[in-house]
Image (tube, rainbow, N blue to C red; front, side):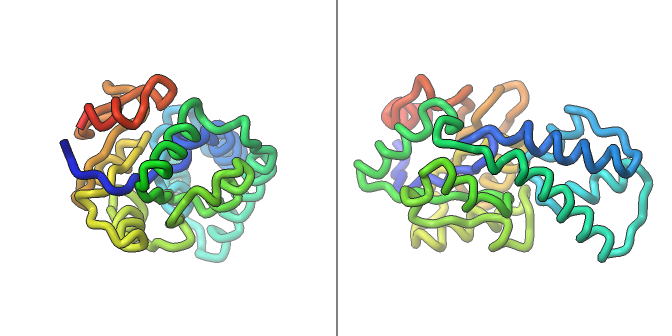
Length: 217
């Protein structure tokens, strides 16, 4: 069995499901730009930074905009998102994740966040989970988005634990690719058909204990 000393969690789709908020916010912005935006497009943006998400929409619409306009559009999208995400409460944590994090802490394992979101601290605070994390690396601390492993490597450095001893939980293929690129063991959260190259894929934490997760590695 692997020697796991820490776990690094993605945020959206792993700890809390804010994908619907992102979808509404990006679609609202895309509508303003006259660019079609489907649920498949939203799926393609999972784990992708705000900058790269906007570029995806602009490329789809064949739009070329100056940097200042792009910043205004990203700020507008984020305002839409915060309006929705600001209603997050502890009840919105995905099933089993709080119990798993508490179990990790009780056993002396470190816990970190590795997310491209720039609103991660706000979301974790509203979930009443912020104090459980030993390190928080989000979109405010990185320059490269997944599948680059920077966010996970930064998390491992903050914990002072080598990547091979840090288990990553991810719901996006780009995040799984990032973990693999950085030398991290990774478990996918979601559908095995949609997620590949993870050590294992589980639908969620609801039916799993830490021991049963370790048995998958």
